[in-house]
Length: 361
Ligand SMILES: [Zn+2]
Image (cartoon, rainbow, N blue to C red; front, side, top):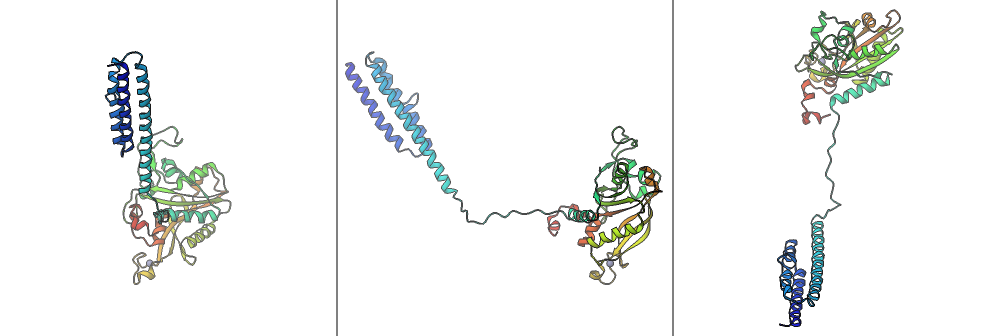
């Protein structure tokens, strides 16, 4: 066989291959098919390689010509492959976009709005009323020392009032950076009154503040929870009297409950105030209940808060001269107010996170 003839045969084979390959690539429908074609024509054991296997038998003059032709074909096929591959990808994206066609005129998915917990709602309302009357909002730690929670509030170690305010102790004894007075275990505060001590230590009268926050006691039944919220107030200056206390509480109770609500002061005892009083408000359930009202047990009054004039003994702990200054203090349970305001009879409902309950507010 002459070299020329051999060259002719190989050229023909390459032309045949080109026609076949181009036609196959053009008819391809999926990326898998396309890849199979790539392997068939351009792969290591593909048809093109197959043809060139015989190149070794060709003379040195003709070999480069055939090699060049084969490379040219290889380039063309690779280009065809790339083009088809891009085309298939575009078609796929197009199909996906059409399938996912969004109708922008459809109504949106409703977003459900959260709302404030009833305790937080009542607490914010209470804070707003006191702020309007010129009280500063002060906060303090929930973990306290015996000094701030009891001693400085005139509740010494053997005082019976400690029984009513039994709390949770956090182990100890500890020392160091929690305060010079601390040689007893840390505890969870039983009231927010320690904040009043902390403020009086730092600030000289006039003082007009409320301290809202979480407090803890070893209590649990339908009206008592081991954790609850309080807001306590303090006003200290020259010539502060019980009349100021009554005025402030009247404004507060009328704003939070009812502008016409009646209230009365009843003598009471707290270690940190002298004299002390409980404040009762008119029962708002009597009419609804009819007969003997179960909420107030027929008395017509509901206990709402405790208050009194700051005991001079407390002032001594914070170096305020009781001969110059007087003051009043009061404390209100936020849950108690929320229960009366919304007619809730079980304190535990506040902490169960039951949406059927919470969505009513
Ligand atoms: Zn009643």
